[in-house]
Length: 332
Figure 1 (tube, rainbow, N blue to C red):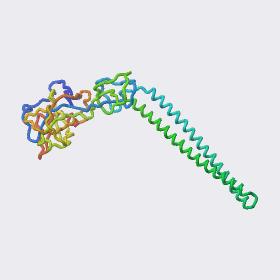
Figure 2 (figure 1 turned 90 degrees about the horizontal axis):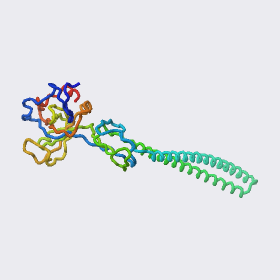
Figure 3 (figure 1 turned 30 degrees about the horizontal axis):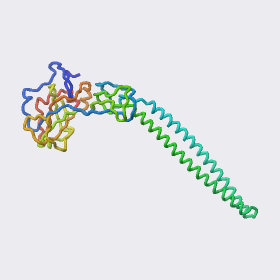
Figure 4 (figure 1 turned 120 degrees about the vertical axis):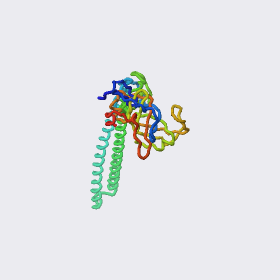
């Protein structure tokens, strides 16, 4: 257990005595060469959980503020109509399956008649060669044989048609089952419910939002650097975060550097002269740290991110940015 309660990704800190980590006397001084900083706020992606189908909301399983796991059931849509459609599709499937059995029997019957017609044709030919049967009788047997062949062809075509009908009925069942599955809304990722937008009994359309959650699989701070510094920053570089509300250093990694510059946003507050073109940078809090303190994670809290630029040798972190508790260093 930690001796103090520190903030990870905007975690509220409650003082526990001497265990808190503060800036050193030079903590607000100039940074050494090769280390730069930018202000921003802790953020995470908001995810809307919406219904793919229209219908009446049956249940909403979670409340605002609840932590949800990936795949957890969060809401359901009434399915009585879909269940009736599924029963109808299953009955249709059983019906066409029986028709396939009938078509197979028709083929067996047509094959037997063709065999008989073939035998009679051969006997008639032999009788004609002996002068016992007439040519007219042979013509009748030839006609019967062709009719039997045609009947067999029709029976086989009928079987193929019925088999395709079985496939269509099976796909209809799968389609309805998909809608039934879609009536169970689940959390797409680990997160916390931010807004509960509907209540049981409300009717929503396809695409209607039921919940909004905060995705806690990527908690980050976003800030801006001038072009003179951004080009020296690489993905995976070490970073440090200090939040405005606590004297605790949070380890992080550079996870994104924008490939496109933009004019300086109004919210950027730099100590030096503002530059016209800036690059957006994102530092991510390691996921093990987020999950270890998941109940305390908050977003929207402002802070300062410190990053090391590419140089030889890499500069050491100043003392006020290097006082990370051992527990954090082990989990990083």
